[in-house]
Image 1 (cartoon, rainbow, N blue to C red):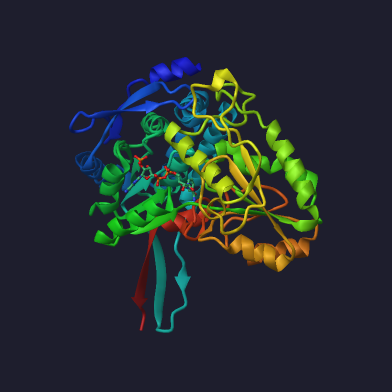
Image 2: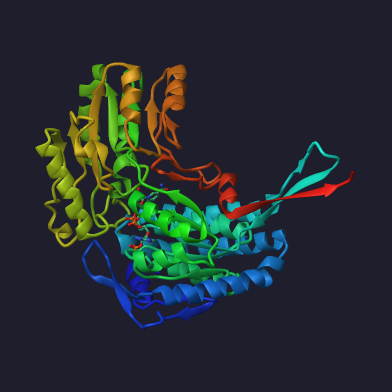
Length: 489
Ligand code: NAP
């Protein structure tokens, strides 16, 4: 399907409630605007609390019905079919994802590929969810059961819209729950299509519902709903705090994947060329709208100048352009509002005394004039107390801080309320492992920038979140443990 066909197919979409394509209860809609050109791509139902009620009723009915009676292996087979249907629609989904948020098509294809992988991983996991037997003191037989929670709410952001949805849908369904997915308002199209594809793959009606609409209204209703036993959220830390408060109403289980301000620590003995040529992608990929963006480069003073020079040169080679062009590496920001936010951070960096080495301005290419573009910005001599060093910018901006000792590097790296990701560059494996142990972050890479593996746990320390997604760990977020004791005395 071409970009235009994908857009045409998406011009009007419906929510998925109980296996039906649904309008919002009050008939209201909102528009999805593509950031490359600023034009409307689709009109989508603007759901409300009543729609969440309808979705919860449908999800509960599905949970009480066929879904909970399926053998784990049959649930796994259905999920494998779901993964295959996603693979069959990979290009269509990639085009939609690219269009709605301005993600370069190459990145969108990678993202959709991850969705199929995640569903395949959790399809295989359905038959590996089990309890254990425990040698208790009293004469008897003690064992645990791992059971689904019931209806779960999944609230996702706009930066990796369909992948973030799959990270939650995969383990939630594998564990036997039914779900209500709430996509971000910038990016509802691929989530809605995912809901349709689940039905096409044969998942029973009501197992996966998709409700669109404003965060505080639809997301707020999910977080507070007494019929929902667990809410999984990815987004800003401040929103996560609101969700925790709302979820307290029925002591709902909560897992959170939140913001980050991740460090990239470069020791003098590292392969500086490898660092400088690959690391621009660790912060500018997805136009910096990545919770794992390594937005603070903490570099040993003896190689500071060389790192700045090589990193800035590599940044200037990053291809900024039309997301539909396969050669494009960085597209526009998600919206014009987001660009203004990021530009304000660039101004604050300059005003507070950091040195702008390259970027931070709108591109001069007239072909990009209608879009929310900003050239990747590199600041040198960023002080740890500057606003750009402390706050998550969520845009293409990185700052470089020099250090003198290993202890200082780790202190600087950990001086953040966030603790999501980070990289360590050194040829001394002892030092790299020491630093990996000392970093207060959930996902650490050594001599590379990779944060995400479907098979391995992902999540944050401190204000970056609660719980771990991906891997077998994610199943803990979607199961209850029941202990049973049989008295043999
Ligand atoms: P956001 O504004 O917090 O929104 C995330 C989701 O929550 C959206 O679906 C949003 O709906 C909804 N929402 C907004 N207000 C809500 C409320 N009061 N109650 C319930 N739901 C509400 O975050 P974002 O701007 O989409 O995403 C960027 C953030 O996500 C960054 O901070 C980034 O670091 C973080 N992130 C973290 C991870 C991770 O794994 N740790 C991964 C990706 C992104 P609307 O869109 O309708 O407002």
